[in-house]
Image (cartoon, rainbow, N blue to C red):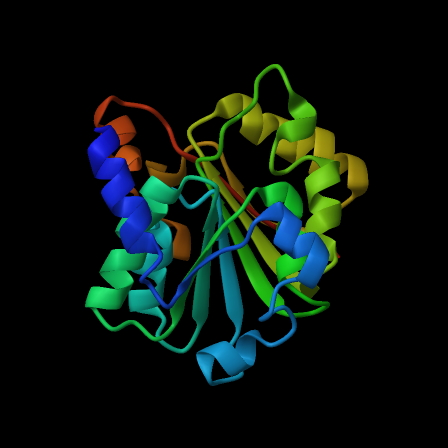
Length: 220
């Protein structure tokens, strides 16, 4: 297993659309494409982030469905990102990129109004550390620094606790606009974008009878 990880880490360095910047380099030089992502992609298409993207299942799937949007998956685990980066390179997907970093540093990769949407797919629910939840007020403040006015945030999770926390303790408390909220996403089949694709683990959880929850809301 360790050998495979080392191989993947080495291959990650060869992918032109996978960015790995140390905290020290961010502080010293900043991120070269911050405020210039349209130059990287070569177009002005909307940018959509997937935070905590893991293997990039959702990033890749959405990018296939919407070639007129640019997708960037973000995760701290390089061995996981390898799969998404490799797939996107093999398929010559020009609208996909990945960043290896902690979500706490996300502001340093995007400038004001540079991002149109954010997907948060099956994040760690952090049952004992609510401040570390990716939908906590602390993180929403990070996202406001680069999300366009009226830009959407999507939360898709199998954690009922995270769903309730986000809906009642964050969204209702801050009086944020909600466009969709369900504690059983697949109860009724629809063409909603949240049902268009499923991650590897989502399929497993559905097979175990778990309910998938979903919220679509805005933070500014």
